[in-house]
Length: 136
Image (cartoon, rainbow, N blue to C red; front, side):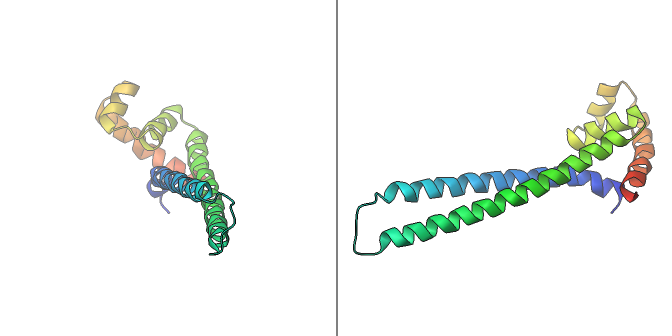
């Protein structure tokens, strides 16, 4: 994996975490709606057993999503730690602004007080530094 692909993983993982968060919320709402309908009153149709099985399936899926979310958050943390491990402060700041905060090149140039061309030059030097870190 190239340094640029590695750094882009932060945004991809962030989008995936957000999707998982939405799915967990949906599952919780679904679980809450079926438990509200299960009033505990005896019924001869076996509805309470079906409701209980459904609630267990929802809980299992929620647990699975939470575990996947934790894995993704760990990946995201590793990208941030890699950026912070870049020795040159300007390079590290530029990588953080671009790949973590998602800023445009022009915004980064304004933020850092450099011409756009110099920002691209710093980025060009930063990528091999990241590659060296991820290869080790």
